Image (cartoon, rainbow, N blue to C red; front, side, top):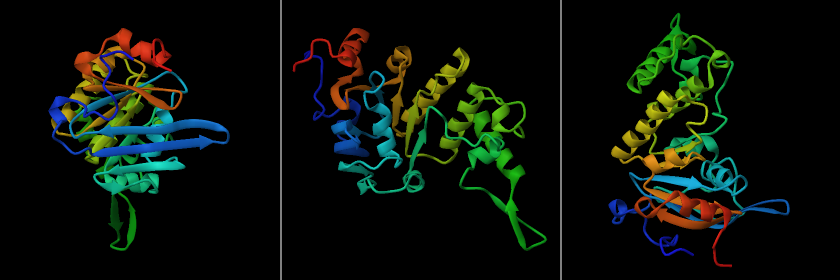
Length: 267
């Protein structure tokens, strides 16, 4: 293995060397029938760092983030967040603990408008006639508009159902939802894949802003330019294992690609 590779047991970036990991995955394994999707994965995230999770299709990236977010339950291993065991929590309880996940499919309700999606599962209510409790659509739209404005994102009508919005606009809504709920850690699965260049830049700037506020980001991306623009550390997976853990200052595209495809690795 290249001398530039940092083993997964070594602390990541110097700026977080003295920190306690906010997220720790220890020896996590996940099986689907006879398929081993994750094989004894160790993975840590520290406060205020951006960790790029890289690998070819089928490497285990999506399975790992779904285990962290509560969608899948690993058969082996431990997952702790803020020193609390989250291995057996439901996705809703994982979100309540402070982990917001923006999946590639966005996990939005396309039959609802922008405000309802920002508040999905945590709807604002109001009383009518002093008795009946109903959703406060106008209040949700107003607060959604404010957070979108802070991100520099404009959607012409927040009353439109998500099904009428572009892919980029839907991504913006998903990001706004995570920011509104003051996530302690954000997982982003291919966040710029459906965006134009100006929107991509806004998302990358958002990631930098989260880092400045000590909110770590796990960035799953196939776009190397995005990764090299914002990541502090790059974790490469292949065939369900972590095969490399590289500091940004030690990384090159060639080095990362070699580990993604297994070129030159020790067997």
